[in-house]
Image 1 (cartoon, rainbow, N blue to C red):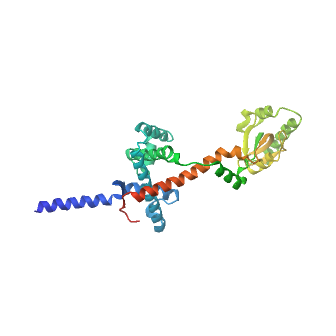
Image 2 (cartoon, rainbow, N blue to C red):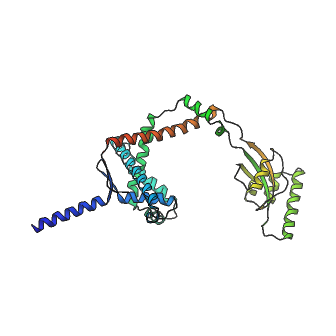
Length: 316
């Protein structure tokens, strides 16, 4: 009798432990508390919170609920992917992991990073296989049910004409004579004399690219000072203002920035005009397709959940 009681107590203890380790079940599939916590901690770190025990209780509750809903939705989609045999192979998972590892200085650095998120290499592979398979299921199955009409493209184009304007860009060359902010007056005078002489030569008809190659102290010297095309906000303000004030073929005066003294030659300009509907159509279609697909996936998950047996076993 005592043995039966002991066995019964042990069984009950194991059952309680299993429940304690399970955050939710989805059609009998388990989502572990550990997986939930991993997701919660990842979101909290994105929000600037070091760990769950340092989070505001209301914030922690909201994040846990949101992450658990995402995990339940992903599990429902994973089950559909398996049912329709739309899954990535183990070889594809290994290739994806190899690509991720390639971004780290060593394999140990990779393991340390996923370990910080609560994963072992094996559980990381399992999770990645689910995510990649769900992505394939969405792109190969659900995406076929989403279409964008020409009328929708026309409507979007007319409602978003301002965003159809191509960003203005200039292509320029420059010559840089470096000058530290802390340079003394004599050094400043020498640098200014050098840039003034180069400007005089450029205005006199000397080949600007050759002048830059032989005299510029910037990294673009090897390209004849060519900076390629750049838009607003990509250069320091004084340089940008001078470059955008020039027409193709024009030279600037001497421009002072924190890097030193510059001479700028404008080579070309582009952008600033509004793209036609025909030119923008493919990009608009892709944008609307993604929007509609996202909503379709949400609706699909809701429909799956309405028919699924989902049991949430943790309180938030």
